[in-house]
Amino acid sequence: MNTITVDELGRSIRAGAKPRLLDVRTAAEYSRLHAAGACLVPLDELNPSTVASAHLDASEPLYVLCHAGSRAAVACEKLTAMGIGNAVRVDGGTLAWEGASLPVVRAGARVSIERQVRIAAGSLVLVGLALAWCVHPAFVAVSMFVGAGLVFAGITNYCGMAIVMAKMPWNRSPTTPPSDAKIMPSQPGIPRQIGSS
Image (cartoon, rainbow, N blue to C red):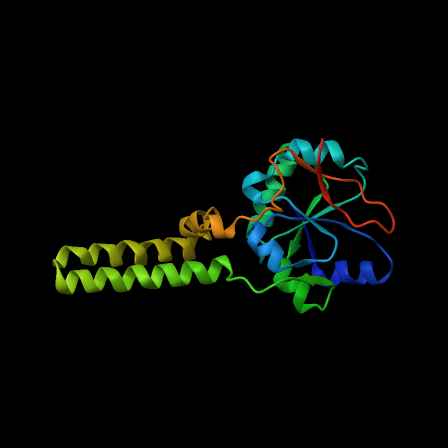
């Protein structure tokens, strides 16, 4: 899998390049903050064939971003499996992009998926302990289950609770593209956008 650092990409942007950026985070994450010019196609809605049909110049790289890089790696693997060999993971994702002072678009403050997971996990642990104390000691299993899930997420970088949180109605946005969304070819002076055929 090809990878590029935000510093390398930033140098090419400052030199006048207009890279094609694909953001595979959730709509809620994207609406809070995203790289300027990035198109949104959430990873769970990514249909590599639609990206391939719109990505006309096979020599032009498609830079894939997520929050920190792990979802972008999965997206690049999906794209490569569909024959799009020029998908490039942006190392460090949007966090590194913002840290490198590259252009971003900010919107209203929303609670990030990561914070929602911490709030939910902490609440479940407290509820499990309270129920174990007041109702029956077996309720301590709730806290143990949540703890085991957090350990699993830390080891594998796969968090089931985050996937469930991303599908909650408050994290869905009316700007989420349909499942047949594709990246429109970029044109000078016109922002890249998502459209359907």
